[in-house]
Image (cartoon, rainbow, N blue to C red; front, side, top):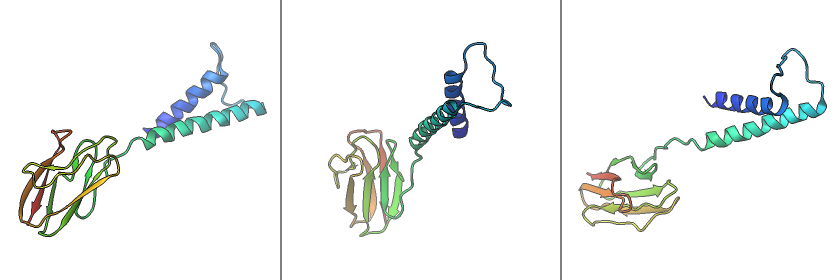
Length: 146
C-alpha cells in the first residue's frame, strides 16, 4: 500500500505539472528537455519525502521487555504483568499526551508523565495490584506479584 501511495503521488505531481487537458502521454517518446528531466527528478524527490513522512508517522506499538510497561496509544502495554516479590516495574510514557500511573488502592501513584518520562515502583508484597491513569480513567492495568 505504501508504494502505491508514493507512486500515485509521483504520477499525480508529474501529470499536473506537464500535461494539460487533451494532451496524451507517449511513454515511448524520450524526454529531451534537460529542464523537464530536472523537474521530474525534483518532483520524484518531493513525493518520496512526502511518502517517507507519511510512513514514519505510522508507528506500531512496541512491546517492552522485562519488568517494563509502555503507555502507548492510550493503553498500558502489557495490560497485565506478572513479577516476583522485590521486582521493580518501570512505566514509560510513549504517548504525546500526559498520563499517570495510579494504584486503585492508593499503594503507588506517579505524577503526570509527559512523553518519554518514566515512573518506577518496587513491589515488596505479593498480591494483585490494579492501576489506572487518573487523567484517562478508561486506561487500566494490573501487576500480579508472586
